[in-house]
Length: 538
Image (tube, rainbow, N blue to C red; front, top):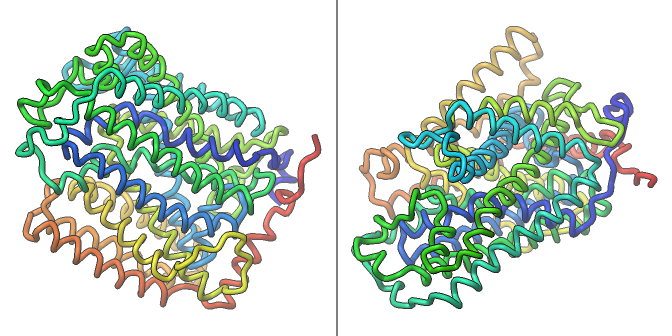
């Protein structure tokens, strides 16, 4: 039992508000500082609809994961979920994809802090290329180190720190919305420069402007399920509640941003919209309106918001690694806990690998699309697992059961694939190449180095991944976004992706574990580390 061997147990001290704020602070990070500006440049006033669509898509995913999270109240629950439907083979692949999705987030938030700090310390970011300098790199490394040190606190203290940060992170955007609406309101901007944007920008803004990126943190509460005082009650509240809260904030910010712009700023079209240095759109807008008090608060928040998000993503990522160690997906040492009940090895790995991510992605914009694509790809498994478990484990305990899952889950899977497509051919090519290389290395190690039994690899159960990833790459190549050939019109491409998504879903459904195998997998997951289920003494 991992917990007993590692000197401690996970402490079940996370209450509903702590979990709600854990997900909320993961969503209200650097995205709100940049998202409204980039979305407006791509979709003009229609960018308001972009945020609404993004919120609806993420909410549908949140509903799927809310049911799954209550079935597997374990820290690192997303790793356990993938084992339950298609066995250890898929679990191994997905667990490391999840890690790659999480580990880059603290780094991108550290880069956001450094980018804003460059206004006062202009040696952190190269003025020509907009990427980190050597000094900026080392400052980012130190920031990641601070995130790691705070994560070594007991979960109760960590969530107390995070709750204080989250109150600030909610208050500042709300003050920004109210302040801009009161000082400047130009409804004519809703009809300004219609020639300078396309309706398709509503959808391409979802990944390109960081809209989906801004919502990705809703599952942080899921990763802390094993530390929840009452996961069956707290998980749906935290997951769904955080998406609702963040949606209201983001839509309000986009409306306030558009209405506060001076009509003179739009004479050249939405795509030409700019502020001094392009480093702080809301701060630049506030300063231009004479709201120096708000501009000052926003520059302070430029450190607090990304910092809080990076802190909680390091928390979630370390729990992914903890689950990898518990399920033998990775080294058992990843499951080691400190006396405070913290997976300290996972925290250390998150810090080291996060620093390495600063090298190939030395700018905020360079990392956002990568994170969006790989994270949405890992989200896509949620609807698949939900449907498979509904069929193969109909009597499993489901404290939260999604109504209409047979309809909503396929729709959600289609929406996830649309987001991947909207990221563009170039981004998807990099993503699928990374996955393919990682899979080949893993398969060679499994068969030739470790010499594990071939039947245990689970080829049959993971075979549906090839048509999913391969089909998405081909369709992305035929489309006209991000370097695609542009052979197929935008609407036709969306229809084809929807059809192919249903085909992939049917294949995944047929290649899942049998009901008996599913029951055994669920029992193994729920029985693993029973010490997690015992409440901790004060």
